[in-house]
Amino acid sequence: MAHGPRVPGRRKLRTYLRVLLPSVIAFLIVFLTVVGYISYHIIFPEVSTEGNPVDYSLLQYKEVQAPYSGGSAWFLAGNPGAPAVFLCHDYGFNRMSTVNLANSLHDQGYNLFILSLRGHTGGSSVPTSFGLLEGSDLAATIDSALVLSAVDRTRVGVWGVGLGAHAALRAALIDPRIRVLVLDSPYPSVYDFIDYHVTKRIGFQSKIFGGSVGLVSAALNMTTPLAFYEHVTPASLQGRAVLYVVGRDSPSFVDWTKQLHDETPGEKQLVLLPRSRRSVLQTPEWNAYDERVVAFVTNHLPVTVEREPSSQSPTRDRQKRVAAKQAKNR
Image (cartoon, rainbow, N blue to C red):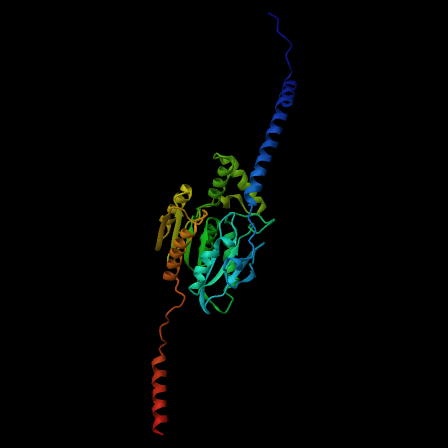
């Protein structure tokens, strides 16, 4: 039985490469293009222009430079010596989204710092890190802000939503001066948040695309990719007061918030709302939300602290009374 000529192994390999290599290259180009497109739109979120905050009843404020790339804050001076409360907006939002709450807290006498997080100023070339670096940014901002002589340097409150909540949690693990936390829709790891937004953009969950966006973000932010998978736990927040808020309209955030709440020791509360600050709220919802937050902050971070009289006070009082009596007798 006759056999056809045998093709040498090298010729077979060249044939395979000639057929497969262009397909592999084309696939990689398409994949990298898609990853690049998704990464760009997620890492550099589109944020609306802030406008003039005075037009929205922010009262008198001062723009102060924050000690991180592209960072700044609005400072609203409160009562001299009162604690400072730092407000951190959500991913894709700007400082204007916090104005209502800022006014409510300012009315109580608190000193307010409203942060613009990295990557969230109009046309910014700075990438967001989804809370990973923003936590250190917030801690550094607190350090620089507490230099102000009119601010209580020992007690701080922080409110954050979404990305801002994750940053607030990370900052609290660094800075023990943060005594009160209000965390609206936090998440335990940066990867969870990236995966959530990748799924939202492409319509299905994909660890490949989620991990790829994480790698791009890590490269742009010059940090290790493993940090994006780190589970931030509040287990060391003993002695702090933490209010967790989440909206039922975001099931993923409900699960994450409950998980973090369960891991938190000490004084804590969990509030489930139809919608949280992650969603666009109507005015009545804003008011009810702000009242609940303000009540928690004022209860656990009072504007003034009653100080115990010193041991010398009774002696001084007696000396004053004796001196007054002697003067009268003369």
